[in-house]
Amino acid sequence: MSAVTADARVQTPSEDAAETGRPAERAPMPLPEDVRTVFLGGLFVLAVLTVLYVAAELLLPIVLAFVLNLVLQPLVRLGEKIRLPRVVGAILSMALLIAVVVGLGLGLSGPAAAWATGLVEAVPKLMQQLHVLARPLAALQNLLARVQGTSPDAAFNPGTIPVRMAGVAHTVFSGTSALAGGVFTTLLVLFYLLNFGETFLRRTVEILPRFSDKRLAVEIVLRVQRDLSAYLVTVGAINTMVGLATGTVMWACGVGNAVLWGFLACVLNFVPILGPMVGIVLFLLVSALSLGVHWFAVLPPALYFVIHVVEGEVVTPMLLARRFTINPVAVVLALVFWYWMWGVPGAVLAVPMLAIAKIICDDLPPLRAFGHFLEG
Image: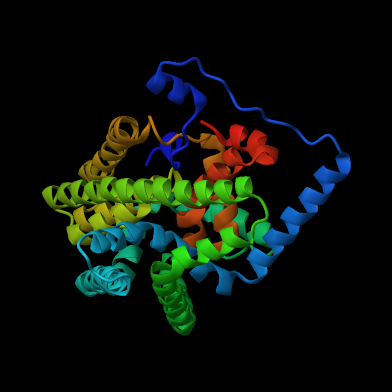
């Protein structure tokens, strides 16, 4: 997904002018004049980020539930249009989500396990074939060891790779209970958001003192719901097409488990810039293991790169560029920051959260300058 177009809908005055024929009038963007306001705002932001980091295990499932609520909310509204009770629509939407996730898990667990088992045996052989790279890899390992403060004297040994992979597997499976708790929290919060989210908004509006504040709160929430839902559904469809194209390329080139690699390409494309970079390296390794160490092994990752370029420079701009624009530098910084805060889930949620922040900043006069800074 192209970083330049990774954002929720932000209708600018120039777009309004293009649609209505009237000259564009940019809304005022007042800057804080009191230095104390800046410092107090900075301290507040630091306090919020500290809470997000410390309470990540609790807050991450809640944020994920809010994002999934934006994805499933159109299905619930569709159910209401055909006279289904809201609770029934919420249950059916969640059942569809769970069925898709469980189906993908059951369908891909076998190929993933088989590939991981073969990887333990194939990587040492592959490294022996790439003996030309042994010295540079050893130098890189020594450099990383010096940076991390560990012993740099250990030579590069391909035989240690399976041991390290076993350590990674132990780390993954040791977090199963935490993962189950997070999934339960996400589903629980998601169910109540789908059923009573509008009630929560109504109560929030009722306690606001002025009518202008009530109207502004409703407008912001509706914009976030409408624009983020459209963004997530559109990007999900685009990334699904990328996964199908990648799986087809892998199958045509003779790489095993093509469905697995297509699914990974789809998931990686939800992380702009960094995801496709990881995909190129991963698919190069997969091709070398499946096809052997020769020039033909470069073809699958090269075709994957072509698919990503076509998607990022043609398909995504054509579908989203007129409605979804954001500063690509802000996208990269958000990806790096939220990956550091919450790991891979944070990187996946970085762009939707950045889009929500921009929509809110555009509608609040004190924060409008920051929203303009985030604009593409």
